[in-house]
Length: 472
Image 1 (cartoon, helix red, strand yellow):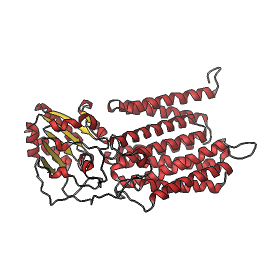
Image 2 (spheres, helix red, strand yellow):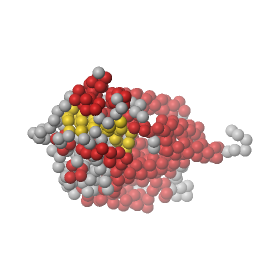
Image 3 (cartoon, one colour):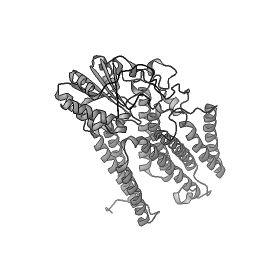
Image 4 (cartoon, one colour):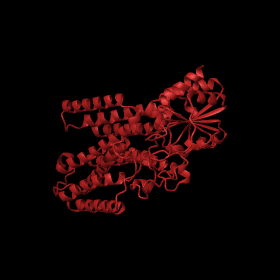
């Protein structure tokens, strides 16, 4: 140890450095060009925080702690290597559930053995009053995060219907459960009664399920962001219980950034932020029947037709969606764009804020394919250009291009801003078949418009065939 310095200032300094690195990481992650640097800074900050905590606490023998870190790290490494980008949204939801569950487990451990956490009042032998509040908030938010994330995972993984599941009297049930949690939190603060604590845990697990079940697939990207925020606040609350500055800082950063992102996305989708976080408070049953209306007339084209139309165009706007992610067509798409640019065609990419099933899903896929950042535009920056565009090439993006969001008040996506691909001179729409619909379960009128040509095939196979035709 350095002469004249005690351990406490060094620990505080290390946590301060890690906090600064976390802030810089968030700043880096706000832009695709700097996202890799942001990830590295975040990893370095976490390494410093974890290393400092291990070096200054002796609650667990180092060999056991090292073994736990090694096992957890190995599991994370294998999952990261094997998981497909299409499964990333449900993976994020699963990770959020683990963060919430960890907060609950820490809270329970602190309640059962408060002396080990240093939260006992020596004079009375009771848990500190402030610690009781922190503990109750931590387990409540953590339990809500866990159960809510489980439902989000099931919906995103297709193990549960993506449509809103509206329980009778759900608003009364939700409000009643939340008021009960507050009531028993006060009871636990006042008397430290074990019954109050366990009721808080049980009600919080229940309310997590009830809040997410009524939220439909169209709003699921917001839910993923919102649960990310919840997990941060749960970690921050547990940081107070553990007297760990790094946990408080990290949790607060994750919680606040997740809340801001959720608000931005709600604004972009013309959704009420309060309605979404309250479990789709204003949601109504979806009117979509989950099947496309194949009896309506539509035009089918081939890869050769698409290649000819785009080669003759002056401008092409590519609109990627979840279908591109499923087929992993991003590399072939970039190759197609490169060939078009060699022909003198202006190529741009239009990204809807909720394209895919989590924030930034399409941006990550395009970055993976080395698509230039200056060719990728957000909805508000490019939407007005469709009216002057020769070809809108839509690859697997249904809900975010669906005019029902503007015209059908009974639609589950009503009010959501869309990419106005229908205004282009020609719309090339890549889709597996006319029998399926988007995640929200709503048919798309663009399929049947006079200026639309449907390209029915696997997205990657279709784009690869277009590339072959362009190369000839």
